[in-house]
Image (cartoon, rainbow, N blue to C red; front, side, top):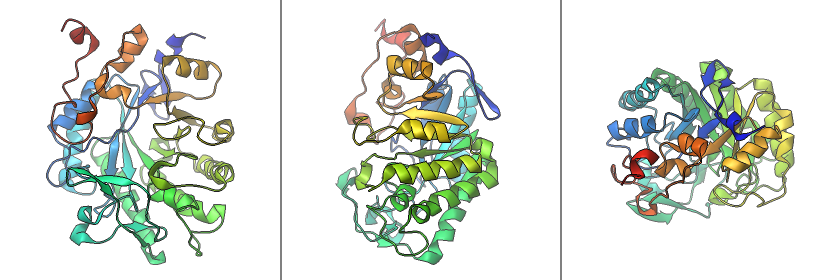
Length: 364
C-alpha cells in the first residue's frame, strides 16, 4: 500500500470525505462580540476545505462552559448565524465540517465566567494549568464541585448545542471528551473524587461522558456524532490511575451507542506519544466504526499506520495553521511552512488567514 491511499475518498456515516486527512480542532481565540465567529472564521475554514474532514475549534455549549478569552459559542442565535457563514463557505468548496462541542469545567477563570462566578468541576480541585484571559496567560481559578442536580443541565446544554450546530449547517458534531476538560475531568480519578453516582468506579466516572454522548446522538443521529478522547494525556493537569480499564470501558459503551467515530489523542496532547503505557490497539479493536488517530502524525507515520490497519483517518493540527493547502502539500511532498507562535491566539487576519498556499508562497 502506498501513500496515495491517504488521498482516496472515505465513507464516514452518510458522508463521503474526499480523503482520509482530518483537520484537528485548533483554538484560535478570534470570536467577536457575543462570542460570535465572524467573517474571518468563514475565510479561515474555507481556505482549509480540502481536508477530508474539518473539525472546528471548540465552541462552548454555554456561558458557563467557556474557559478562554474570545472563543466562540454555540448557544445563541447570533452564534448560530455566525457559524452558518463558515459552514456555507466550506460547503461551497466541497468540504465537510463538524463542530466540536466543549465545556471546559475547571479550566477557566472567574474573569471569563458570568458575574465573576467560580468555574465548575467534578470536585473542588484546582487544575495545575493556565488559561488565556485578559490578553495573557494566567493560572486558572479554584473551582467548585457541581451538585448532583446540576448534571442533567449539562447534558441538556450539550444536546441543545448539537441541535444548534445542525441549524448552523454543520455536517455533525464532535463532543470534546479529552484534554482535561469537563467530561475528561469526570472520567479521570485525579480530578474526580466524588462519592456519588458520578464518582468512584470506572462506570460511575464514565457516566457523564456517556450520558452526553447518548443525548447528542439521540438529538442529531449517531451517524453525525463523534467524540474526542485522550486516555493518557496529562493536558490541563488531569491524571488517571488506571487509564486502560477506564477507556476500554468507555469505548465499549461508545461502540454500543453506535456513534460514527472516536478521535483518539495517542499520548500527550501535542507532546510525546509514549508518555505512558497504553494499548491504543485495544480501543481500535473495541470500536466498530471509524477510528481517527491524532498526535504527532506526518505523512510517513500516517501512511504506515493506514497500511497496518491501525486507524481509518488521521488528524493533523498545527500543520494546518500555516499550510491551508496541507492536503495538497502532503500529496505532492511539498515543503511545509512554519506558523508564527506570536499570532496563534487572538488578533485578526495576521497569522490566521494570510498564510499563502504553496504555489503562491513559492513565488514570493
